[in-house]
Image 1: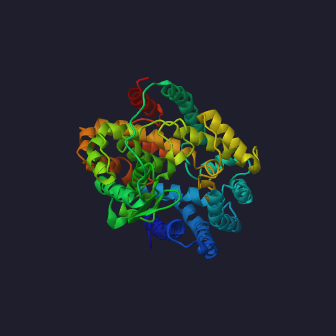
Image 2: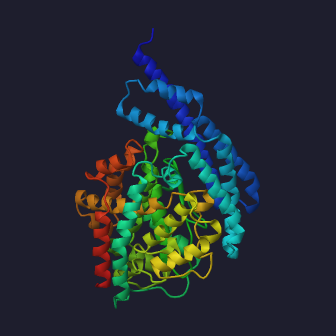
Image 3: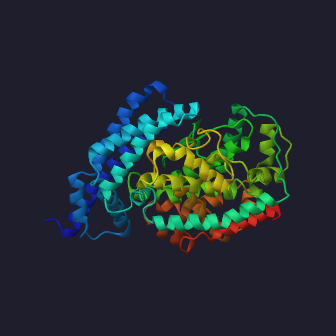
Length: 500
């Protein structure tokens, strides 16, 4: 006769086998999404919408399976180790949310999102918000329905935000956004009043092939594992994959090669996190990332605290000059990488400071859309008004305004705050990494990025989703999540650059 311990172990193994299949289906859907954005011919959309819908439905069916519910109930009373408890915690949370959402709603959301992509692309290309308005209205309504299914008595935007950051809380996001707005606006105003003009070493345009070679060389230098990745282009740069296959994309701006370089290093940060997850735990929460705030902290760490630093340009200047035919100094590249723009309209091209005003614009608009406090038809006007209020610029077209981002096309309402939360965490991780790694800047200056990879893997990557976000921050840094380090970093760096 099997003992209670043996029964629990058998239950856990059956449960884990089911969880792995669930993850594999989700990852297959990710590859289909990558293909649609990177490789698929435009005419493939109708079939791809059906394919992704079928994948989403199968994933939902596995997540809401009665057998999974039974295993979770049995494991409530089982004697589990901490890692097993973490796996059960994460799966239970996803299961409980998913069981409240009808399968047909999941299918409708998936199909609508897939169909929305080409509509958005054409609307953006034609600068025609009206062509996208009905699609956006449908996505908003579907996401309201989704939130109501999970918890009809709570703020629907809060419910959606928890899809991307389940543990820090919407109150934390709002507090951080307010704290940064209150601190950064005066700093940005002081910079605007400064007489300092930062260097611009670029003249003319730089073709895609030249820029591709440059960013590919940067990925080589940073330690991107080409055996487990690839570089492609996409209208909106992104990274996706697993610890066995984490791909990056970028895009090229002819007049500004630093835009592609920054975007590529940003996506490298996402990919190196994914590649750093434990391979032996693939298919379980222990081998999965800890949600989007942490994911974004890794991309912002590499993009801002490494790629925009003076030590990085001490290392990379000769390479950049060789590729671009420029004759810039390290200081000139450093200044060009950190210019604060007074006319930035595009979020992904924004500088490190004003970027967060872009996030606030999107956060306030999508929150009001989901709450029913803003009509879709009014989005362009409200967007333009907020851009003028927060950034002092007003878009001339919707293509450079409310149509510029892909996130709402995917139905990803609640996603945007994680960008700022990730930037804040990146600064906190940077502060502590510099305390732990002797000669941090000297390593960067020499192109020795191994110690940084090792520190991030030890303190963040290897844990997967074992810890809640707040607990992971405590584990990695020895302190609670705080915006203090980001604000100190930003103030010190930019007041020195602009002598203000």
